[in-house]
Image (tube, rainbow, N blue to C red):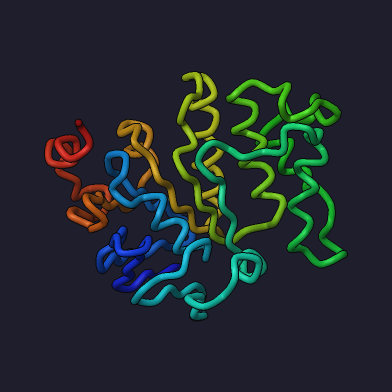
Length: 231
C-alpha cells in the first residue's frame, strides 16, 4: 500500500502542499480531484521523487521512499504517466515502449503480450513514430510504456486531457481491468468528474495544496465535490 503522511512541498518560498495525507491500496483506484493549480501534480511529483518534500513521509510496501531518487522508486515498482503524455516523438512506438526496459532486470526486458491485449492499436503501429500518432493513441502509448516496467503502483496524471470520448472509454476499461487483477494500486489525478467517479474506490479533493474532502466511493457527496471542481 502507498501511504503519504502529512507531506509539505515548497517551490522556493511558496508552499505547494500542506500536510497532505492519502493511501492507495492494491486492487483499487484512488482518485485525486481538484481545479487547476491546487497541487495535484505537485503531489504526484512528490510521490515519484521529482521534487523533494519539505516535511512528512512517503511509504510504499513498508519501505520509506521519502529520500529515494526517481529511478530508485521506479525500481521499487512505481510508474508515472505524466500529464501531456511526454512520449518521445522521434522514436517509434516500439522504441518508446522499450524505454521502459531501463528499470528492469535482463530477464524481463521484453514487451509483455498483455500490452497489445490492452491496446491492440499499438501492435499495428510499432514502426510508426510517436509524433505521427493521434493524441488518443499517444496517451495509450504513454500508459503502455509505464506498464512495460511491470509496476505495482501506477500513477496517472489527467489521462483524459485532450482525448476523444471513444478513447476515454477505452482507457477507462483498461484502468478497470488493471485494478480488477488485484495486484496493482492505481493513483489517478483527474478533472473529468464522471470518469473519475466511475473508477474510484476512494477519492480526495484538493484546494490550495490541502485535502479538503475525502472518502470511500459510497460516501461521496456529489454536490459538495462538484462545487469544488467548478471555476
